[in-house]
Image 1 (tube, rainbow, N blue to C red):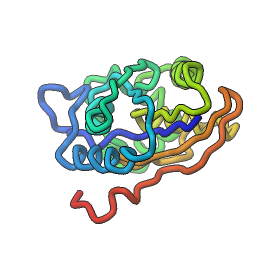
Image 2 (cartoon, helix red, strand yellow; image 1 turned 90 degrees about the horizontal axis):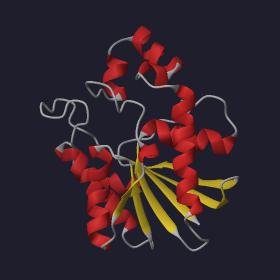
Image 3 (tube, helix red, strand yellow; image 1 turned 180 degrees about the horizontal axis):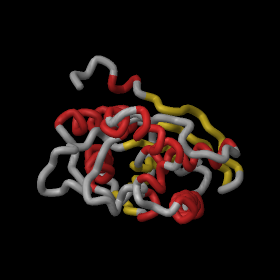
Image 4 (cartoon, rainbow, N blue to C red; image 1 turned 45 degrees about the vertical axis):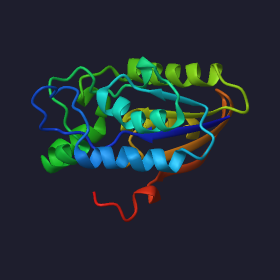
Length: 198
């Protein structure tokens, strides 16, 4: 089967009503529409997303174009799902070298999560997608930076999970014959955003 992992579009960190789980900004919606334009003709058969609003909103344009439901799978959520206020990696980096180093040392703990549980939840979500699919399925998963890193690190046999920096609205493509037979086709595709005013 084909599996496409999409990082959500840029969220509004200054949203007052939902500081813990913000909606997309205007440029985040542009990124979501660019993803939909890219994937709409690729034969997507199922759409899955994290329960967090920024991922669900990023999935919405593709789901609408294809007439597919968005299946919510809890394990695709980001490690920051229980924090009081969302902060992007760009904002964390701007807080200085020491603070950024603390984040990189253990990003899941930094965001208030349990690393082992988070890892297990993401791989459980991956197994749920793969277990319900056959060889002809083409599944789009709208998720977050750390879950994408967990999956890539798992596939590559890497110990740490901070090796990749998926951009907003980026696409990572995998091919799977089962939970232990996954290959990486591409990482962090962002050409579909070229020429857009973001």
